[in-house]
Image (cartoon, rainbow, N blue to C red; front, side, top):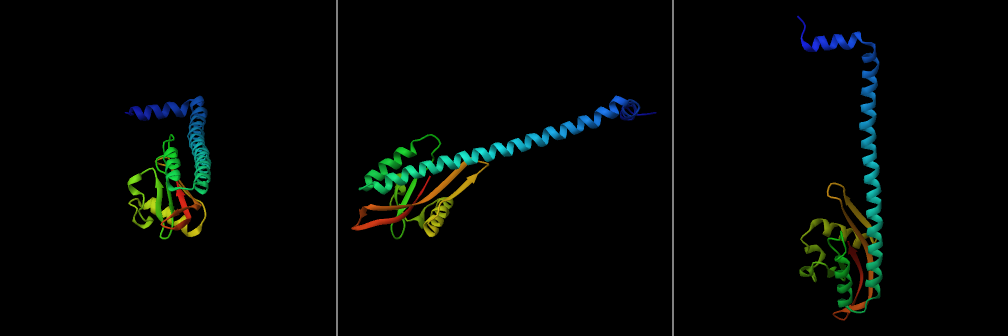
Length: 171
């Protein structure tokens, strides 16, 4: 006595249209799944490139404002305004020796040394930019967050009788 599975298997073996269409159906399923996965990767790469371009544009805007500012209050006002933009979680500007936060969307951290900042990711990317004087970025695909950091020169602002000089900004 055959089971239902055995009868179904015999039915598939004896029918020519099942012998042709079943492998074709499996192939189409494979192509659909692999195509969807490929499309997902392409879309994520495009979004990452768009985030990176937006981060670079915001960084250039902040760099211009910081490099032309004559007082610390002007830098803080511009950073606060940029922090109010949609999708901007944090803006930080650091400068001086040792590097201290001179402007931020989180005002409680202003004046803190970079080495003492509570967020290890922020500390790490700022230290890399300060050390290498090159742009850095990190993209967290799972969370959809971009951290973009760039070197900056604050030559017109004097704090404590000393020009702030080289620094970094993080968006």
